[in-house]
Image (tube, rainbow, N blue to C red; front, side, top):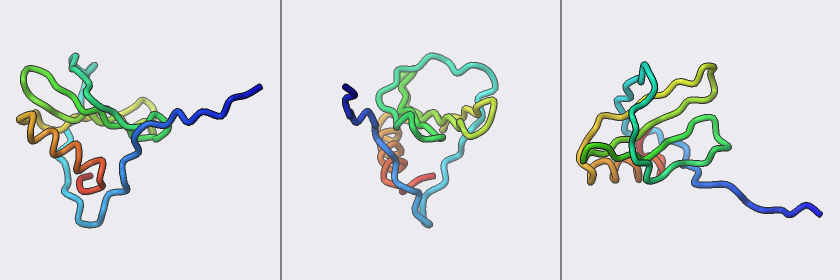
Length: 95
């Protein structure tokens, strides 16, 4: 008997027309270790991770619509600013 479970995580809202652009920087090699505090659903082609490392915060972006995947990171900023950026991405206020 198959169980019908909902395994979806957070889905970010579609970016609004006035969404703030994020200065994504491509990660050339494997990304450095970071503590992931939050992430968006794996069912989407673009996944975001809310990361912390070295007392700073940043967002890591995985674009799985291409092969190989493209991994980019936001600038490393104060943790409070990273928390704001995370909320903006989830609410469609940043892209």
